[in-house]
Length: 379
Figure 1 (cartoon, rainbow, N blue to C red):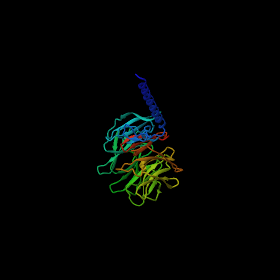
Figure 2 (figure 1 turned 90 degrees about the vertical axis):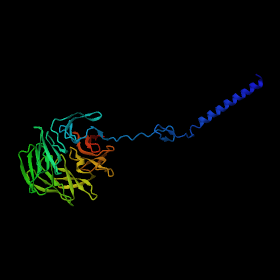
Figure 3 (figure 1 turned 30 degrees about the vertical axis):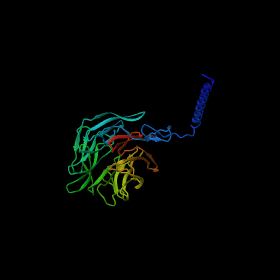
Figure 4 (figure 1 turned 45 degrees about the vertical axis):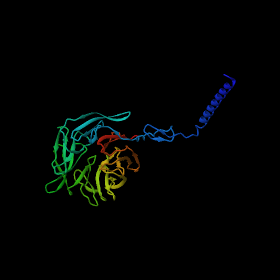
């Protein structure tokens, strides 16, 4: 090869090396300023730079509701010893499960069906504070309410006559208070033992549609008209011997009563101008009432054991659909009216509320799927 050809090849080599060097320099110096094409993740969503990724789903609320059972539950309740939960299914069978608390929260285990007669068409159960008796409520043939009392000793139900129009337990779990309406339309307040013995008429009740609620200490009975749809609906008090009658709540249209454990305070619902029910606090000693400024029916509330704390499943204003709601759990100090909210997450309509023995967890039936849930109240 002559000298001229060698020179030409050398020049070409030098030109290639120089061009490559310039390209590398420009590429490296432009990394800080050059905008890359949008990147696409596997879901098809695009982002401005390839270093960005899809924003993860929102972390569940710290107090998100935890599902304890896949079964449909009816009137769940805590055992009076605190070590288990009982509930009915839709076929009227009673179940019992062990409630245990571990490092990650509560679990429901060892679920078993109890061997007692099944009762169809149960709408709810009325549980006493203690003992193994209970009352089941169902719809009567005429469309009203009917009750059957289960006796834990004999393992049998006693069907109450249709003359009974309202019923509740005394704290001993043996004695019943009920309203009896005779064929002439006269209503009386009565007491009896759960086996329908030791019947005692206490006093005449003037209305035929009164609802009664016995205090936890058994010393007082609050009653109000269930069907009255007028401008006012008083809540009155009597004693189990009928020696005292007095009006506690005189103003407003009021419905529902939930006694505090100390038997002095109670919650009740008062209908507001928009037709919703607002929770109010009543005091039988002072005769005073005041609003808690929370909209919810009494059935969506539960007292803490200190008789100063109330937990309420308050429906969100825009969540009502087909009779269901999505709730926020509100804890209220009834002395100061200080509130704390717990977010159980979406799709929670909490009913049949009850607390653990130590008030560290709130249990409830979720009406959205009718399963048993709880939220941790310590977070």
